[in-house]
Length: 119
Image (cartoon, rainbow, N blue to C red; front, side, top):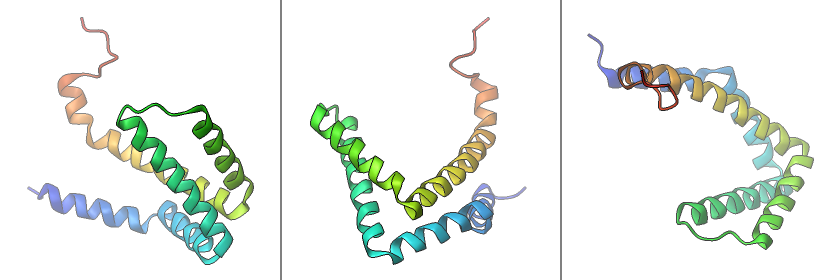
């Protein structure tokens, strides 16, 4: 019987070797190589993480912070290389979400999904 951790490391390698990950890495490297794109992307990430942290701590997010975040998002979406990076990130996220659904299937079958009507 295969060790579950060995299977997990094989899955990690498969993700690293996937077209989705390679596309993401390529897009990331291009953004990091461009000084202004890099700064813009880092500002975006900092804003994103700061808002997530506040949300997780149950802190109020001000209207000003929301507007500021919207401006940062609009800026990065207009930058071609960052926009490509975000697209590639989304593609890989779809794969990872699919894999997550597959590996949690035994639990889902055992417990059912919360939105299923209990009979």
